View (tube, one colour):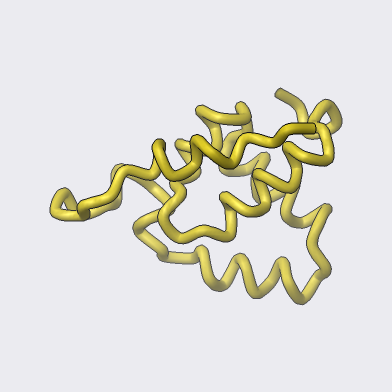
Length: 89
C-alpha cells in the first residue's frame, strides 16, 4: 500500500503503532503494508519537525521495534495488540 492511498484513519493508526514501544515495524507492515522506511517517511510528513526528531531518538536502538532483536524471554505478542487498532475510516 502506498502512502498516498492511506485513509486518514490508516495514517492515524500507523502513527499510533509507530509510537508504541511494543509494536514492531514488522507488525505495521503486516497490518498496513508499509515497510520501516515507509513508516519513517510517513512520520516525517505527518509530525512536526521536533516531534519527528523526538520519535527518531526514541526509536533508535529500541529492540522491541524489531522482532529479530527481541529477547526470546519477552512475554508479549504485538500482533494481538495491534489487531484492534485498525481504522474504521
